[in-house]
Image (tube, rainbow, N blue to C red; front, side):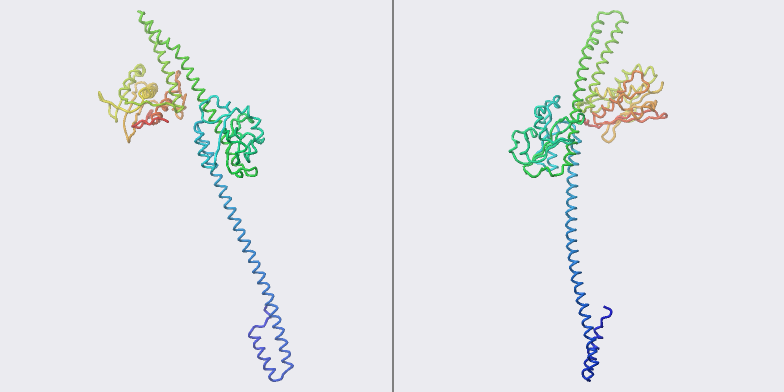
Length: 479
């Protein structure tokens, strides 16, 4: 393009050509006209070449624009698919979290309704093997005798680690078994996903069936991905089995507790009653004292049995609180009397204070709670304090109120041994006591909890030990 004449040069050449023609200089005019023609031809060829290049460039731009639009469309589709995948994944995570919070078989029907809402299902059903539910005749889920139906179940579910069926209902032999509904037949139409809930302790054994039904025959088909569904079903299977095993263990424990209490209490009646009958005819004071000791031991044993039952119910969350107005000053007076021997042996005493001041005669400190439980809790805590305090050092109990809370601080000058400080309120935590059960502080924590409160401990070699019980002004029974 640099060799092409400029328009001004071409104009000058044309003017020169006119001048030569007008003066009759034909030969020079011919040479100049040839030069002008060659320049024109060269310019025309270059223009056409550039036009072809521009056309090719426009076509390329159009192709790039089309490619860009297709790429943008594909990217939007990919982002939409990703978002939908994340949304589906989040829904299954939410459903799985709900399953993991399952605590009782009676919660399952409500759980299934919530799962249908989260996952957008028309219907989902759990059918349990009846052999799994023999201990729970009142549980709300439908059951079936799998042993008699295994030929239909095996012919429907595929073999493998995950046993499931996905596709039209019409291809299932006995869909009524999977949905516990005689109206669901192969002619009912629609599609479904059915999963065999396997026993994680005995691979290959089914504890139940989880099935989803949809009236749309194309919603569940063999080509669709089932990873999320399979993972959810495995979570459901594990949670159901944990709940069943837990409820079975609780029931077994209740049965053992009930049988044990009955078997122990029956002979204890004789231990308690016979000394009373014998002492009425006994004149020897020493023998009467022995009979009294036997009777007191029987009462103590009965109290321990009843206490173990209460602890069990508190642990299980089934204890029903029966609160009443309780005067703690009066209770502490009874505890002081009961612990008289220990306090005398330790050359100690029990100082009771209200809001930091010594209790005045006739003064009361009333709270809402269950009298026997509160007596047991304070009796254990004060007994522990009496046993732990150095000889000659008193035990103090300070009662006070603050911000709708009631506080009871039991203090003694001794320090809790290092080896039990972190487990002070744990079950069977004890140190240095030959006859200690490790249940005193543990039961205190449970009793405080069932009243809607809590208990804590601070200890040091210098300041001694303070156990603080915090209770609400109005009782909040444990659910």
